[in-house]
Image (tube, rainbow, N blue to C red; front, side):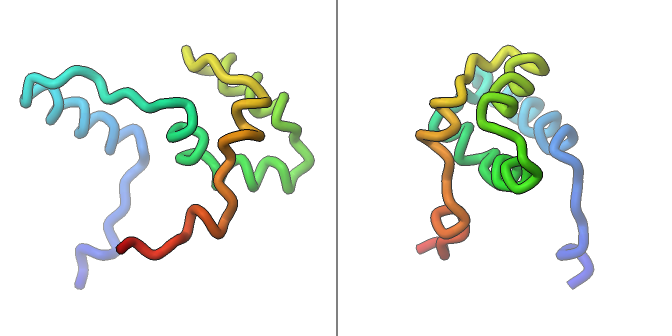
Length: 89
């Protein structure tokens, strides 16, 4: 199928989701810290392999967004590759 090859940057996906939520009269989607860390665990894994500490990762997130996160949050809620790639039931 040709549609399977389509991919879009996250900014476009977020823009589309925000428009749909606005159209539906919904507020911004909110993520608890454990869900957020789970979502970014692929990036955390890569950064750790490159030698970055959880403190550096937390500082980068905090400096580039309004997300209040600590190294402890990252360590506690990091989802291992096994946890991230479970088949959906």
